[in-house]
Amino acid sequence: MSNDFRHNVETMIPALRRYARALARDADIADDLVQDTLVRALRSEKLFLGGDLRAWLYTILTNLNRNRRRSLARQPTLMELHDTTADASGTEAEGRDISRALATLAEDQRAVLLLVVLEGLSYRDVADIQGVPIGTVMSRLARARAHVRAVIEGERPALRRVK
Picture 1 (cartoon, helix red, strand yellow):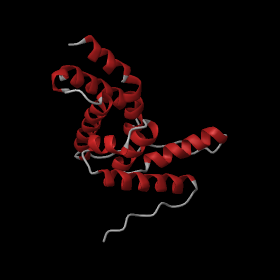
Picture 2 (tube, helix red, strand yellow):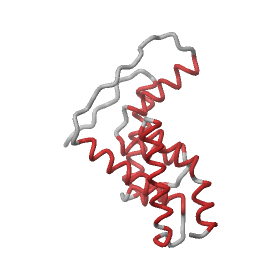
Picture 3 (spheres, helix red, strand yellow):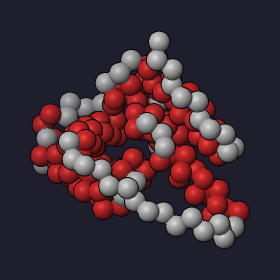
């Protein structure tokens, strides 16, 4: 294993952790996703043919999360109880509103929003990571932004119409 490759992967850990935590909404699950991503990346160094290491690592993490979600879909769901006390002040309440808005997004929309806005990736990189056309990334991002805006402004987000 090349020391340069290992070092470059290690420098990505904070960004991977940030993305995984926002995507999974659970610190323990996020840490597991990041660890699994790092193990796969380091074991698969020979498969990395150069290019954008960051996009490659996000692709691994995205696929691991997608697999995790598929296995969870086969299990019964449990509802988490939230404290609904309204004694939070400005910034804390706004942060909670944003967290709530992100939590109610469809996973594919949340992932696109996080990769573009939080991680600063290009639409092309996100399209490659998610394995979808760039137009799909753009529409998911537009829907995600509209949904977050509606939730924060206290509106009921529009339901997707089926044609």
